[in-house]
Image (cartoon, rainbow, N blue to C red; front, side):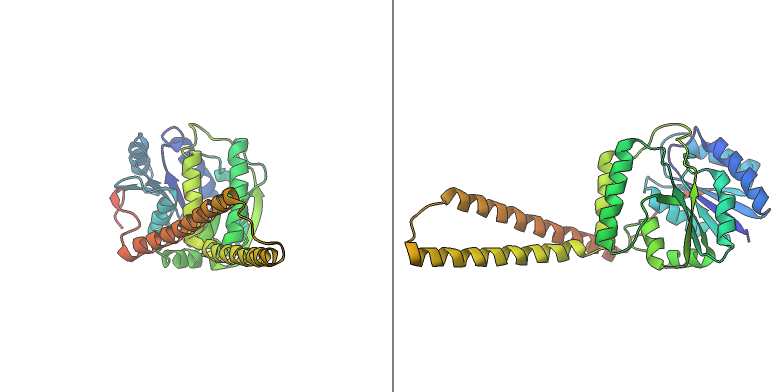
Length: 308
């Protein structure tokens, strides 16, 4: 049984895999001889899988899993955690923005008695727009999910076997690795790490993909949008009641001339839009409940470099 495992979701990473694995091997050998690296290839359509096969033939401590189709980064992390055996497990991205050399510091911090040690990116090497949208998302997510989530941390962290086993027990369809681990509440620490620029290529996350991920994540972790919709509805009802009282009093005192039709029509369209929007939110929650009820597997593996 390996002492430490590293789980890396791989997507369009053929330009950086050799460098990643070389640096991982150097770092992990300083920590323990018995380690494994799980590379989960998410059908990016490049040469990543061929490289993984070649790397695993040269060093069997590097193991590969390939999905049957593209499932997404957080499903790749889930598959890696399902198939790793280490007492300690590091999760990191494949683009080398997460520096393998920081794993040693994460491991040493974990030995002080922590089940989770987060790598906190003090100076993110990302475009300004991505940093801004990420900060906005994490603030909204923390508010709606009622949990403190540090937006300066990504997937890069080390977790104990106890955390891995708890994570494997949670099989909901909508996956957000960081949120699930934070929700567990195990003893957590963080260290500041250096965040590098991408070794090669460009990010596959477009603004539309980031928005869709953010929306699905919030829906998966919180029913607060529904509760806010209820509060908003009662607030509008209260304001309408007060306004109705004002109209009655004004009519009794001064008469009731016919006026304000444009404002009435505008208000009707406004309220109609609000109602449709709230029904849409309810529909999204129902759709997610339907997805969970189908009990489909979270991912499908096409092939591996090892038997499990």
